Length: 447
Image (cartoon, rainbow, N blue to C red; front, side, top):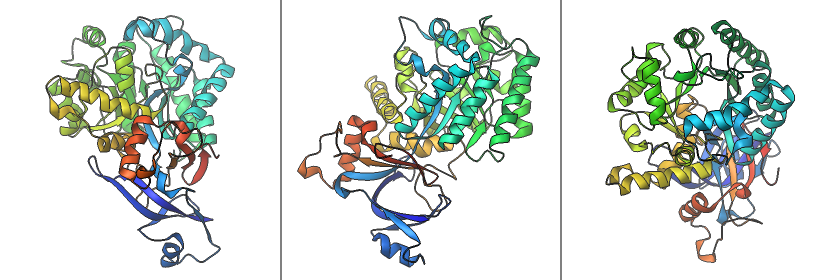
């Protein structure tokens, strides 16, 4: 049955324009938005579009004055396999942290039971925080990575599933044993995803060279070739940490920059997601923009690991696509809402250093969390806001519900611009009452 969703909708029309309006949104049985009528009652909108009584249902929040519909969040960078380690940083920075905490945990995913247990929980948790689309890093293991794809498809979460490629400078106990082993394993994961979702409608493989340090030149060259031949997306890390950059350039002296390493092997494409990009040079930024790559901004992780502060406005001003990433477990939360809050605060720290132009607005960080992330993932024609022809990926946010962390006062009721700001700074998963992906109810406190 088709559905008319009636209430206040809040969504990004562009980087700087957040639309807040009462509307009736008609969604067909396939989960596609077929009409959006502003300031029009649900039944009136349905009748206008030829929907007869009894052919549709109506969904509306109980308290219109303190609730709104908001698009599903897009997490452009999350390590599903690292979820048990959220909040564990010790006294390390990036490279030490990988060896101390990350690689030992990821190596345990050779046991399919471990993979199923952890991946089930991370998908449930991200859905509970309103994440409709996630670009997941898995591990080197084929069976475990395939399990992640199966679970995401079953749950209805849009997901990019990446088997980590790492055949160089990696621990002996956790790596691809050879170039050929990495190639065979990557092909196996692609084949599995194609088997369970042939059109990659919900779940898609994504080529995942972990980062330049852990990949041989031959492996990166092969991945670049596969990306071109099979039109597959790519995800990797870039310029997260200064020591990482120094090490990369020592290993790849033929390149004039970190971005240049990837570009040499055809890994910078309009379907490439580059995580972090904290320390890019002007020339690297211009190269990334020219190639059409997207950047996954991970403010919580960059602060927790003292990696640095990404200059998001500087990237956007050059035409680089930018979305948000939780970077679990470098990031300490699977919540994109919390990550948006962190992005806003990091931008203010940059502004306090003397560059006011670095400051991001509430409208801008909410754009990064939805439409901006969709652009990074190449899904902006399909999701990211409430536009006719796109899919109904939507959260029903209620701020005055039971156990809400947000206190709403009588004079704030109905003032949705203020309520959205309070939600950004104070809200959490307790405010997510219902959550749909592709028109299917998948999570929420009333699920």
